[in-house]
Image (cartoon, rainbow, N blue to C red; front, side, top):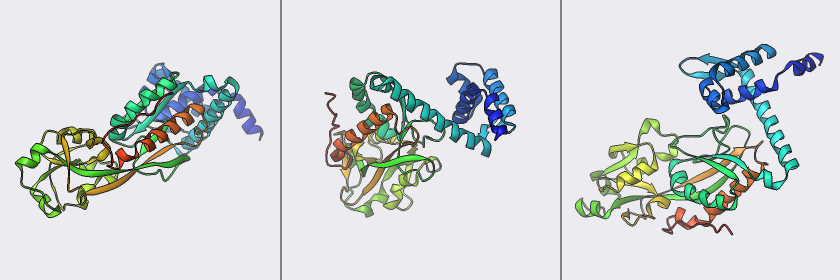
Length: 317
């Protein structure tokens, strides 16, 4: 016991802040930029911490960055829990007005984040102007463990990690084409006609979820001369009238230039999940934006399920 008491006395808590940022970024240069210091300062702090603890916290590589050792993972989890406790304690002391301020970073799939969540969150800020938002609408997973985001909206529920998760909504995808495409190409009367046509698809080796392989459900070895990494680029490519594409209804149905094809036969239902680290779920700014995202998504259920064609905004009154 005395050994651990002596360790706590010699531990520099500022070093832990630098450790946590490197653990999240995976690179000293990125951590230094976020902390507003130089590379040497971060490296020195990490070296001091490893010396104090008498253990290696990172495996260092010039090509792939800093990777946590098992001891580093244990320390990161413990420090993140302490960080959350400190933030919760500060909220209790400072009151609601201060608690409903600060930054919240939200990671999301590209289509949901860019074309649905972005306009919704600008209206959220009318009600909570002191909360600043970073929206990461990207065609890949955002890591909650590395604190790349405070809240993540994904196609699949996280199966590992200390996270709070709930299903956000179901959403439907259908086959779409422009009216010009349908007028200029062979008619599509049934699924058996589809192999005669070409499609926009995801780049197979860059898809971040097997749930994006829905074209395979309807056509074996479909002709896909144009592939991209995200739903938004597929949407804009489809508008050019050269190919068909399976698109989320909440994107395509808002655009009258696109027409659903074989709507009763080519139909996929996926779902979105919303998650955050369990240590941060109690923070007031996280709770209020979590509840808002759930509310606006539920409010737009017809759009997500292909039963409406207009984005609905919640009143900020």
